[in-house]
Every structure is written in structure tokens, then in C-alpha cells.
Amino acid sequence: TIQVNGQTSEMQSLPQAGLPQGSPLSPILFLFFNADLVQQRIDCYGGAVAFVDDFTAWVTGPTAESNCDGIKSIIKKALDWERRSGATFETEKTAIIHFTRKAYKSDSEPFTIRGQLVRPKTQVKVLGVIMDSGLKYKEHIARAATKGLKAVMELQRLRGLTPRTARQLFTTTVAPVVDYASNVWMHACKYRRASPINRVQRIGANAIVGTFLTVATSVAEAEAHIASAHERFWRRAIKMWTDLHTLPTTNPLRSATSRIRKFRRYNRSPFYEVAVALNGFPMEELETVNPFTLAPWVERVQTIVDDGDNSAMTQADLGWAVRTAVSSSARNGVVGVGGVIEISASVRGGPKLERFSFTLGMRTEQNPFSGQLAAMAYALRHLPDLEYRSVALLASNKAAVLTVRNPRQQSGQEYVGCIYDSINALRNKGNVVAIIWIPTSAEHRLLEMAKKEARSASRDGAVPAQKFPGMRSTTLNIARSSQRISKRLPDNVGKFSKKVDMALPGKHTRLLYDDLSRREASVLSQLRTGMARLNGYLFRIRVAASQQCACGQAIETVEHFLFRCTKWTAHRTEMLQCTETLRGNLSFYLGGKSPSDDAKWKPSMQAVHATIRFAMATGRLDTQY
Image 1 (cartoon, rainbow, N blue to C red):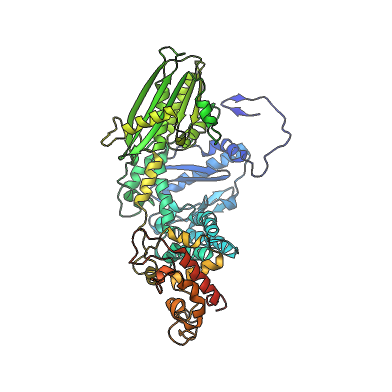
Image 2 (cartoon, rainbow, N blue to C red):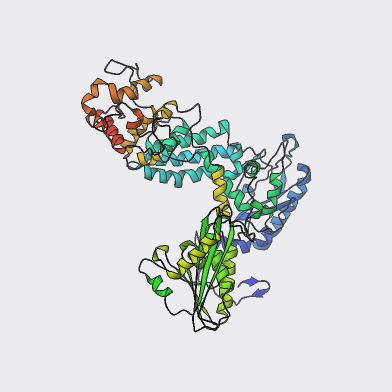
């Protein structure tokens, strides 16, 4: 039987007791099972959280000694719940820790649980994060680097991958392992503590394009076109900070954001640096995003999406009593919405055509997606009084239509809620409502009229008449763009790489590498970084006895190898045929941008491929050398 709020269900026999391993019902049922243990108010005095069978509770106070009474009450409450529920806490897995600003203020007195002494530890694991008593996260950063190293070594063992595939695998299998919970510890990952994580980055670049591990981290990341660990950490932190401001006001984390912003010389929040960096963004004006838009049992609206068979166009032109079309326009720094409502002769007061338009907000707060949702909500709310009629809502934004069909935890929830309120009101009077997506290329008459209205609302000088909540997605994208690291290599790093390619880092490296084989990518990366299996570099790392080229004429550098070594003259025919004016230009042959190139520069892939074939034909850069 199940009892909820005093109501008991009928008794039924269970053919199988328990749940299979990995059942999605397990975490849901655990919420009910341990609710009376976990549910308590989270405030400045303490709180509790749980994930399945992992229970964590805390108390705060002026001293460690004063917190001991609170810890004892937590232990007593847990043991009482244990007796009521039939569950069992494992004393061996129970951990207690004191977080104090000064080490000498900590308390080492043990606690007694079922006759066993449990002594406070200097570090514990909470939901996969190793937290030490000083909150320095040194152990967790080392563990994250170790797990990342294991993952990237497994990637490195895979043979035959193209750089494109290897990069995708690095992004999906290595980076998430390192970045887990980085919002908590990224502020402590600096200087020497970041070295192990940078090593993971270099090995990842080696697995993608074959750069040597001695290549500087920033150069290797640029060649492999992967984001630096610092950049990834900031992207996650900015998203977390934005998400905190969209939580309902009843959530304790929402009210904590104001305290995070306060200036303190010591013991700052890990998010203080993020809060200062994003201080100029109106986070307090963001929309509220609830865990779900609609209850699971609420009937979803009927939507019709054109899959290329023109079925949507056919449906849109059927005998609807009312047809309304909506559109949005983002230009001149604002987002405007517009629409038309076409009422047929079968409806009282028809036939007639009504138009509407208004400026939704600034482009820094709104977007075309939210504009379409707002236009839908407005159009449905301003329909005439209808009974037992059919209503078609036409829209050109596919994402907006799909969102109305299956609302999720996303931007625009308030507009979606208004749309469903209006649809439910129409349904209660026997009306049928359908939302139809028609692509802009279809040139539907009503949609073209709606687009014209939307453009008039986004004309130059248009000002919103009413303030609407800012969209989370728009604010997040702008915040990330503002904090994007400058696209340039550090001043004291990559002298040779800057000589070869002054456009580093850039998207053109994907064009250079993505379609190459693993061996070809390794050859190109050696030539572009200057760290290659040539005597000039091998002598520097004490692998070769001399830096002289085998031809005996000069030091074996990349330039000498490609253009001047007399041993390989017969192999350079294809390279020389690529150009008449840029022969001997290292940047041209290695796909880099030179100071003489203009803004419309693109790498010559013909020359790059010819250079790779030349180097491979000589065999000079193969492993045996």
C-alpha cells in the first residue's frame, strides 16, 4: 500500500519486490523514503541535502565547539529515522569535518555513533567533491587531473582517428571529467596547482593533431582548436551565476547571490570573482525559470510542423474559423513583435483582419525566439469570444513551436504559461486550437503581413513601452562573450608559432587539420610549432648529437628542411608549382597568416597539402628519426 497525506491506497500484491539495478524509479522513490530526514529549512544556521542514499547535513556557529551540539542533534535525528524506516547508516562511511577560518580553532573531539567513535577528518567527499577543512581543494584538483589524465591516455591509444573525431571525443569524454564541479574549485586552480590539468590539455592536443608534449599549452590548444581549461571553467561559472538569478525567490541559493557580491578581504565566496566580472549585467531583472513549465498530466497543444512535404501549408489553408500569424524581428538594437488575426465570415463580426505590433525589449535582453512566444501569447489573448470554433496559430520560428509542444526548463516559460492559459480557456468553450510552423521560404500571405508588422516595431528609434523580464539565454550569451579570453597567444609564448601564423588562435586551424589523417596532422603540427624531429630541435632537447643538417650546409630548421636542404630537391617539385611569388614563404606553405596578408586571407590548402606530402615523402619526420 501507499499512504500520501493520510490517504491509504488499496492493498495489492507485488509479483516482484524491490527495483532492478538502475531503475529510473529508484531516485524518485528515495525522495519519498527519506523525505522526513532531509526536508528542513536551509538557512544561515544549517541545512541538509541528499542524493539517493548519500545524506549530508551541516550546522554553522561561531566556534567548532558550539557546533558540536548541532552535530550531535543531527546524529540523533538520523538514528531516530533509521529506527523508523528500517534503513541502516554505515558507521564506517560516516564522516565529520569542521570548516574553520583558522586551523587552531578546529575541534578533534570524537562523536559516538552506536558505541563507535567517529573522529573529525581533515577532508571528506561530498557528491564527488573532495572538500578539505581549509577549502583549498588541493586534493580534489589533483584527483580531477588524475582522472582526466586517465581519460586522455585512453583517447591517445585510439589509432586511425581524424583530428575532427579526436577533438569531439576530447570534448565529450575528457573535458567533463576534469571540469566536474569546477564552479566550486576553479578559484583555487591557479599557478602550480593548474600544471597537472594543463598537462591533460597538452596530451589532448597530442591525441588530436600530434603536437609534441614539449609544446607550450596555449600553442598546443590553438593548434588542436580546443578551449583552455580556464576558458571552460569560466563558461561553466557564468552559466551557474546566471542560473542562480533565475531560480524562484523561495530557493535559498537565490537570496545568497546578494551576499556573494559583498566585498570581503578574506574568505570570499568562490563566485565573488564571477560576481565582480558580471557586475554590469542586470541579473536581478532576469526571468524566473521553474523546474517545469507545465505539470506532466497537462494536455499539450496540437502542433503541425512542415517536414518538407508541404503538409503544414495545406493545413494552414483549411477552413479555420480564425487564423492568426505571428512574427518577430531583431534589428536596430531592439526586438519587435507583430501579427495579424484573420476572422472568417462564419464568426460574429467577420470577416475582418486585425493587426498588432509592439516593441518587446532591447536586444541585450530579448531575442527572436522570445519575441515569437510573446507574440503567440498576445495573439491568443486578444482573440474574440469564440465557442465551438477552430483556431490556427501560424508561426515561422520552429524552435518556438516545438517549445510550445514540449515545454522544458528553459527561457520563455512565462510566455509559454500565458499561451497555455489562453488555449485552456478556449478549449473550455469547445474550441480546437492548433499551432502550425511554416518556414519563411514558403512566403505565406499572413506570415508576410505579420513580418511587416514586426519590422515596424523594430524600426530605428523604437523604444519598449513596457519592461519585460530579460531572457536567460540572451543574457548568458552576452555575458560569455564579454568574458571571452582575447584571441591571442601570451606575449612570452610561441615565438616560432607567431612567426608562422599571426592569426593564432583561430578557427582556420580546423580547416587545416580536420580532414587530415593522424599521420598527416602530426607532420603539419611539427612543422607549424617548430618542435619537429629535425636536428635543430632534437639537439636542443639532447636527443641528437649535432644540430647540423645531414647535407652539412646549415642547422636543420623547419625553413632549411622545407626550402634549402639539397638532399630533398627532387621532392619539392609540387611545392614549387603552388606559387611563383611566395616561394620560401613559411606562412604560405604551412597555412598561416603573415603580416602582409589582408583581412580576407584564407590558407592555401593546396600548398599545405603539397608541403605535407613533401615532408612525408622524405620520411624525415617519421618516428624512427
